[in-house]
Image (cartoon, rainbow, N blue to C red; front, side, top):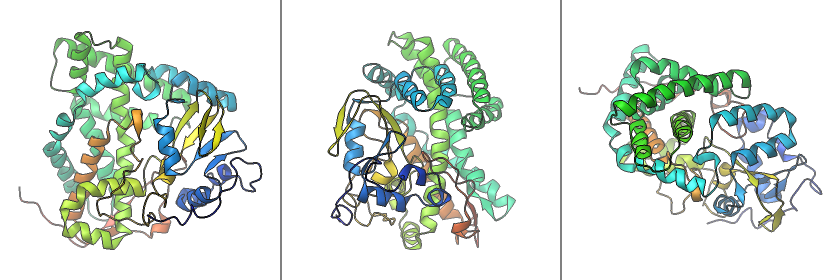
Length: 424
């Protein structure tokens, strides 16, 4: 473990006494291309930082993990919306959407959170996910077949990383093949929430109406899918209301789509930029499972999550007052040199320390096993079947989407020198 940064004295939290507005720096093109130098400065100079806009940023691993486990930092939908609107009246439009989404485990606090998560856990089991392994493998092979047939260069995001989680989640929830193109269009609409709130509300209305019909069908004709499992749990009197059932289905279906897409994309890019580790992985495919966690640590698609302070809480020696918003910068925490040795490089050696990329505490990512499985099989198949895989453009020419909470490429073009044909 190194202490390069922590050995330097940290400045006082907040904009006062600190010349730079780090929050403004997060809106620059340089940050979009590579946020990690700024995160390193924040950890050194102001690890518990209060921006001039009155929002806190936590960047040290210990502080982020403390915050994730502390129930005084709330994820409650109404409390969060109120805090956002109080700071920016334009966010009032967002409340229209969040009210339509309903209350689910991802936007509630205990005791509702524990109740909802327990019910979903019964349906979203590790055994159910692992049973998908061969089906996921088949889907990945089919996508790679189509990409190879189209010829290089190939945009991995469009060809593999995006259709894979969409296909898998549709199968997991029993969404008929004929409906999947429309469901994907709804996903795209939700991905542009900040650009068009009115359209996003229309999408939520349409998707909810569709789910209502699907749930009604499963009540009379259940299958071996997650909606049927949740309907069965409700029928047993486990306390899931109709609105909660619909909202939970909506949340589970949409939650892992973009995140897994960008985990695959960011992970492959990291390997291509670390050829020594790429060679290790090719030589020892058994490293694939632990490799996924290292790739999440190194360049997580979820850069930060937001909480609102429900009551005064002290973190890192500073008191965060009730009502303030807090950004828990998972990506900065995952490169904290007080926790990880040489954190700015990929090392596929199974890590001794956990990372907060999938969260920590009561809101730990429920979909982490599925995201790991899909990423493992997608990367493994690409590396096995496409020898000589490399970027088709200079890495500095890659474009990143302008969202400080998420790290998402617009495209990942690759080429290769040969194709390994699979025996059928």
